[in-house]
Length: 342
Image (cartoon, rainbow, N blue to C red; front, side):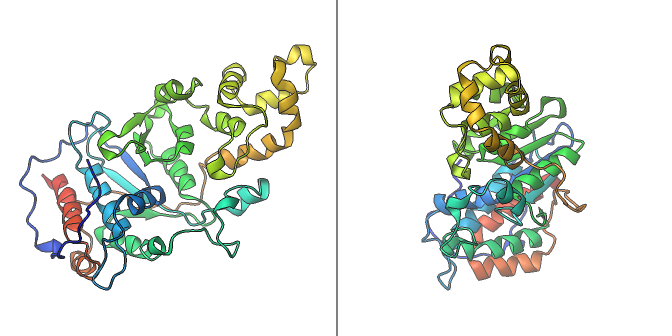
């Protein structure tokens, strides 16, 4: 499934669109929660949908339209996609309140430092995307789709917190591997990984993490801290690559256990040739683990996350569709919501 529209279309009034007459969505076998890594998704939409898709005043709307198509696909998807559990009963668009939280920077100053803008404060986001983010928030609000930021935390931490609270199966929609650390077969928490496109979503569970990295299914955070992640400014332990990191995680389970082994006699530590490398970067590892780990206790207030079957504010949504030339993308979202009433 392609989530891009390459040609701007004449805006229509979404509230006037009749309910879809196609086969109603198959109901979920049981209630479950879908958590959207919204920043990751709108960045993907921004780069996947042509910038020539604009509002009447010339403002780019490619990220908005792409995101609406993604959400419509996720709640009324292609039944052939084996990653799909069924239509979610709950949906939250998780947001960044702080893309580079102070507690992470204090622990590891290199954290996302390469993404800083020229002023050294705000994230270096293309202006053509920046102008679309407030519109995304307004459209989701009018549609009745729950949004959840948490002061001082990233969207990842909101996702970790809501997944920990859920009490029902959870699917996390993201292209960010950091969230692999949240998979948990015992609580039916998975990642729907978007790296290969929405038509080829991969459902990543603990076996999926093991298949990719040859590590225990819940050990991704320890593995990432050892190996490093340039996209987040994590240098990793010097001289330790993915293969050695995986071997250490399989043997010791956690970075904490490796650090404890450093205090043993060399012959008893079991660290072998990695001992000197870990010892040299001991302080990095101590700092990195609180940075790499997704928070599960962010201050996310209670919210109504039920997936609506009709928009919360149809008139406002119609006005936004006309103002921003959201036309068919808005209609697809509304029809996907309505499919839940069948």
